[in-house]
Length: 252
Image (cartoon, rainbow, N blue to C red; front, side, top):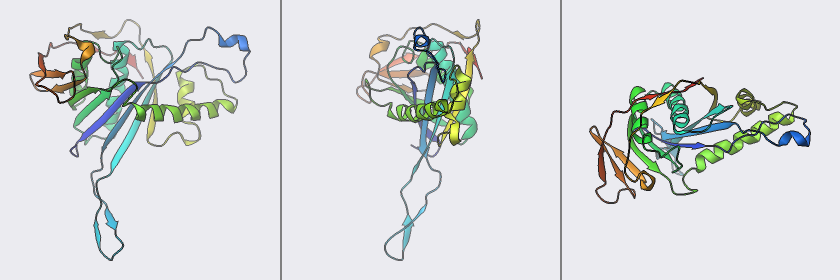
């Protein structure tokens, strides 16, 4: 990667059940879980550091990498394709604000239906263009692989959330999720936001990508996107852009 590129991984976390600090066992049944979307970014540090050796000389150390993670908490979300794109836009927009020197992006998610539907590849490119970012590649990880950075961030954030709850707090909505995950200083290099879905808002045009469920890699060019069933194997199939329309259905 170049200095102006970043690699990001997105994943929905396991739903969080609302829970009072002290509640009857009967209150457990029939609960609806709350959603969290995690986005983690990795990029090269812009400056090399001097490394001291055993001798009196010094040399430039190898490049190191920086990471930043973002979590969007939503009280009620069906985790549809539109929900996923809207929450992803919130995360990408905040990352661009925090690190404006990043101009290009490589993205990876799993192959779940809300990440790999027909309109998602082109809609994600459209979102990045609106934010001044060029989306270069779009990869789908193998089953249960490649999302470990999101799982780690979500896991330690939930542990902090449980500690907050154990101090006598009730966990009832997305605002409580944010407060709990930021408890005792929060998690290093992690930001949490609360979003809500606005009814009767949001739009995503329909399109069709042949054999979309078998795609594992996408490469974007100005005129089309090339899709591959395996990363960097074969010539790929060029699919022209359909100029779809996307409008978010979320607000912070």
